[in-house]
Amino acid sequence: MNQYSSYGQGSRFNQRVTMQQAQQIALQAVPGRVMHIDMDLENGVLVYEVFIMTEQGQIFEVEILARNGRIIKIDQENDYD
Image 1: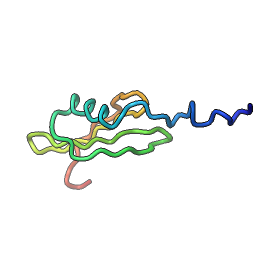
Image 2: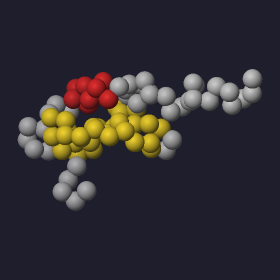
Image 3: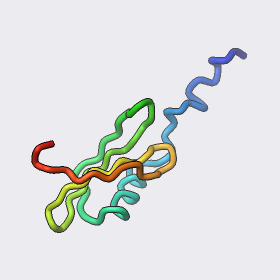
């Protein structure tokens, strides 16, 4: 067995949180209606990007680590993005 034989099994790209779980985590932080969910690779780390519209019509992007469900950023979007 060489150093590459287990590639993928213990890879840092492993996804542990489902898209549905990420959506629920985001909605707990920012109540509203989910408009869109993406998965992106940022600096070698998989993150969910969940876009939520609040009852006031504001749009927020919630970034969640795919490996453990931790929220790493919440940004309010504006018309210029």
